[in-house]
Length: 297
Ligand code: C2E
Ligand code: MG
Ligand code: MG
Ligand code: MG
Image 1 (cartoon, rainbow, N blue to C red):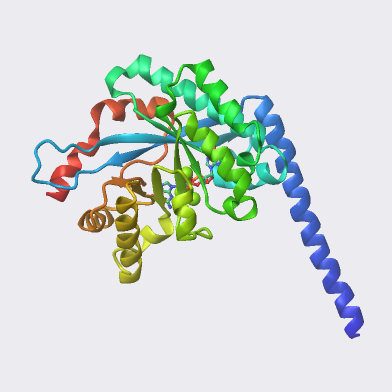
Image 2 (image 1 turned 45 degrees about the vertical axis):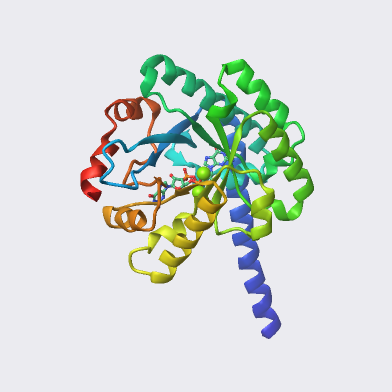
């Protein structure tokens, strides 16, 4: 009977695994078609420069940059966030094509905003690049070609990378990053604190920006340990002359707490959710973030 049970259990597991695999295979096939059929879109979320001194009349809250986040207008499931399909793209071998599409679309959007908004256009655009793309030896050339083709100045582009890939092939990745930096493109370490961060590696990666992961921000107000970690990262980053962006700011209380810790750059639903570029244009002109001055004063 014991043996019989195992066979039945194995069968269920197998069926579940098969269902999961075929669901993913379907998703991958659909995503491949979506790339060809122009079903992808980019939404943009501001990274806001918040004032550190409420008594300084010259300090202003404004948009430091916008981060491009890929979306899929799925014909049946509606608008899907990146989190719903990026892993499938990675496993299905589609990330190269997806990444190339994202980079071009983001650079084109920046130029469109320049034409449309003039001085109110975002100064910088941040684009996520997966670790897998970093191991492609052609990436630096592709970035250079995209900048040339779209006419975007290199210093306006920041690529967001994560630390995890540095472990498997640090030589390859650090080499690619150095080439990208030589173009004048900036780098940011995304999800900082969640990877296999070693502090020595931090000084090897030529990043100008650290983005503190939202898991630290979530319970900042309630959890003293989380606040201590954020405070330490802010201090470390600022001493290394990096810009430190805290992600996942969802309410005024959290922003207030960050303010007290000396935080200068924030991103999160409280400031703005990721938005379609046409919907963000009005906000970029109106700069509602300036009202944060009174909130914090
Ligand atoms: P990420 O780069 O760390 O982006 C932050 C994610 O958190 C985004 O989800 C964003 O919509 C969400 N978010 C922003 N503010 C808040 C907040 O205040 N609270 C909460 N709870 N969430 C917030 P999304 O768009 O689903 O992206 C998930 C991840 O997928 C990204 O994490 C990034 O690693 C990856 N990704 C997104 N777009 C691209 C892309 O174009 N290429 C590549 N390779 N990866 C991408
Ligand atoms: Mg990111
Ligand atoms: Mg992040
Ligand atoms: Mg993340």
